[in-house]
Length: 199
Length: 142
Image 1 (cartoon, rainbow over the protein chains, first blue to last red):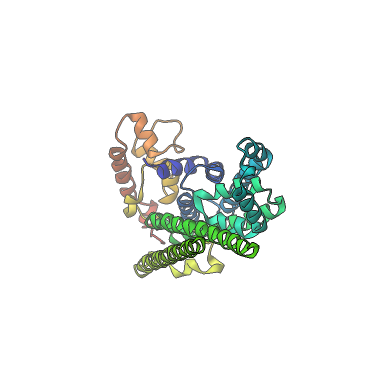
Image 2: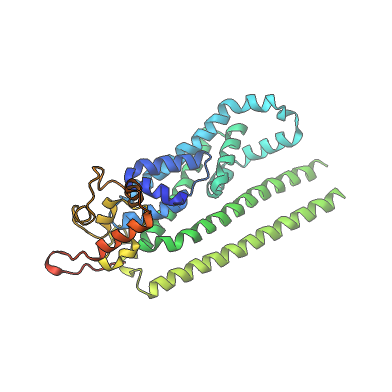
């Protein structure tokens, strides 16, 4: 059995607890197929085996908690690591830190769709000291959209969810790459503008 | 020199973003076409997609759709999916495991030391041979 099939066995056995554990682990760092799992859960909800809204609340809550774990870890211990590695001596690191702090809201929100790479944004947000409120609000807003889309699609297609899971993973992957490019492009543009202004 | 490199870098990023946008559009078209195909086959019912009825549950599958059973499914879920009485599969497959129905097809096959695919065939056959009380045919709703 592949990873998704194993996860689905646990989903059927332990229901919402499995959703919470898988989504939390994926949000923290593990590359698990949480979107495909939520697509299946949406289909199970359409068959009356799950409660749609409870599944959504569990997924959003676990996702946000996972993101906050990453953020909290680097917020608390990140400075020590940066000092130990002497990263603060590098001009580029300090510029990047400043840019991320300035652009925090849009960066946090858009990186919610960056798939398995969104934990990197969480770690960075904690490291550069993005205010908790800014992180939490934008994280929560972004976290509602992705699970809702996966669950709703699963609910709509019902028993045919397996036909869509591969395509959904592919679309999510492309969106993730596009989001990362978008964020990097914004940071790059702002840094260039500042560099040009300083000359 | 540095300016030339910057503008070249900017051009490359633009091209990559453009290419990603095109791929994304193609994928969405593909997803839409796939969805339309299911729609045409009446696999997806318009009534169930209306917002007001969005959370109305789909009905159970017919025994004829037994090929939808997978090894990762629990017996509890299979019973729900096909609206089978809880004891039906237990009796048909002579399942003595106390974890029934909260055990997967693959898990039970492993405990019997048989291949999951072989046991899956038995489960499918058992589901197929089910006839609802009173002979009423259970219809698919998706």
